[in-house]
Image (tube, rainbow, N blue to C red):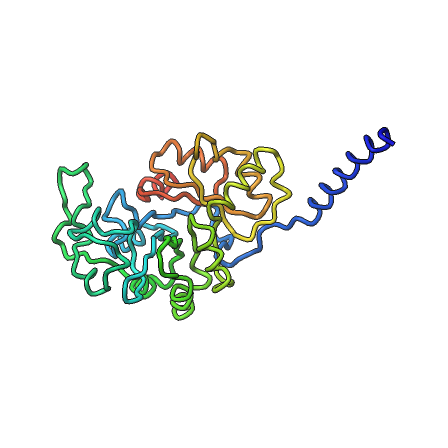
Length: 292
């Protein structure tokens, strides 16, 4: 009996693995990722925070004029339900104000200088201070750039943004132009339920699972419910970005868009590996690397 079990168990394992592999499905197709370019997408992080004050209308205007393919931004919700663009949960780091965004009204936020603390030279100068740059709303960006693709990160706020975010996307017919992102799995799960027609990237736990599977050469067993992997070069001492990772992602129909890549050498390396986009504070450098 023991001898029989010794052969039966491995056979069962092989059968289970084969069934899992055969039933695994690649990521679904989405119009956001149309094969309209032979080069990686230039994704301007916060509109290009290394060149202009990030998350401002000026940054998005400059990035679009420069030739960026995608505008990247972060959304928060105000006390009166407006969706505004800012990286942090508070206004302290970038403006001349203080306080949590979620406790402030849109009117209060609009009175702040959104570029007050932006500096290109580590605090020696503040060239955009007092130039009238205000906190931007998501609606303003949709109105100004109806034809631009956008990566929009959902921050972890107390109040849910899923419905107002989805409502705004639908109101401005941006379903094929927006990629929703978040580090928080529960926020993306909530958004996907509310707005299933909009493309999403992987959240933290989803990314971790896929990275570990690829390390074990088991990426083909994964059935992603998202469309892209927006990942750092390394995380927690683990190298994420490798040629094998890019190949494994592509085999599951997933776009690979590493962040936040600001130096020419790394840009060229990832382009050679075949990434689909690069998230950068320096869209000017990336566009030059790609040949204008």
